[in-house]
Every structure is written in structure tokens, then in C-alpha cells.
Image (cartoon, rainbow, N blue to C red):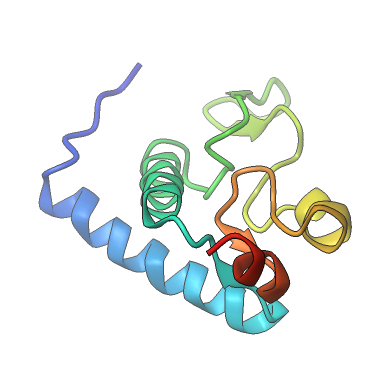
Length: 113
């Protein structure tokens, strides 16, 4: 497996892009970040790592695997590309947060701050 230097300029630049991406997701859906900063930072780091390794912001909480139909490409085992369909359709509206915890309803944030 390819290793990524998390202090490299490439990784830090990708983290900045991912932060802007997650900001846009929050604005688009009316969501807020998890009240625990560590949750958000960990997920943003995972999304950035997956973007560099696999070319997509696969959810860091789920496995990725080689896509047998497209050599050299990867896919999420559970179709989890951020923001994933399960989060949009079920997890955030019903549970108040997505599986990874980064995206939350304002009500969830208020209750858990």
C-alpha cells in the first residue's frame, strides 16, 4: 500500500481543498460540523488521504477495494463517496449525524455541544 507523508505539502494542500469541500457540503445541505473538533479533523484527514490514494473522497470509515471492471481504479465497498447517499437520505435526517460524524443537523449539534 502506498504511504502518504501527512506533513507533506501535497497532503496539507489536499486537506485545505477537502476542508473547503466539506464547508460547501455543510452549506448545500444546511448541516453543521460535529461539535467535537477532533471528529472533523480525523474525517477530513481520511477524506484527504483517500483522495490522494484513490482519486476520490471515499468515506474513511468504510473499506475501498480495487474495481475489477476498471483496472487501476478503486471503489467503495458500500458506495460511500462523500457526501454519501446513506448519509443524505437516512443517517443525517434520522440519526442527526452521518456515520463518520462530521456532518450533523443543527439540532444534533445543539444537543451535543
